[in-house]
Image: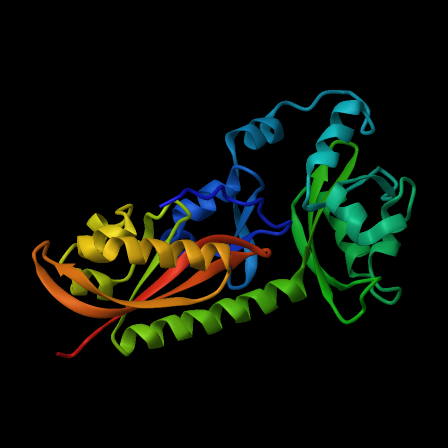
Length: 295
């Protein structure tokens, strides 16, 4: 089975704690390229990121000005929406992601009030509180550019001003709804006898459902990191490998019938369905479902 290089992750990366546990290999790989936000009740609560990013964030602050070349380089590399405010609460810096979303609203010297809908004063009031107390806050405001959407601003006190981390709260709710819907479909498939697995682009299993463990006679721990083709007989491995490659290359569902090894010896005929797992428009793995014949 040929190897496929993983694609660049999307600008925004959010995952529920349960999805992170199930597919840790996938999310660990993405975290090396951009921070992964771990959701709690639909809101970011924790961040999984690389050691290099953590070292940069935790390094002692220097007395260099906020517009120093080192900070400009960092902001240019950040795809998330970060806005820096000066002591007068005006914009003094913005990340690449923030500039792409807000445009000239985050030009140096732009007023804080321009980041929210004109009638919404919650952000300005919260920034004032954080400046006085030093305690972080998160508030939601209507977007100035897209009034039908809510933005979540996490405000932290910074040296000589404030740091705003911005998330599209409406998008987070939409994504959570989508995840909940797919989780329900996944569970319904298992209830109907489907044994499921999430397979990475190297052909190894990142997640195996309890049904798959029951079907094969192997433990979930043993199945995790096992090669997908090792679950079927030698005669079926080439066909399963071809279907796996086709699901990735053609980005379309595939199906075939084969025999699964049970306990390493007995055989069980199954119908196997494969579908590409997409993230931000890129294939990051393959979802596999096996339905055993009743015979």
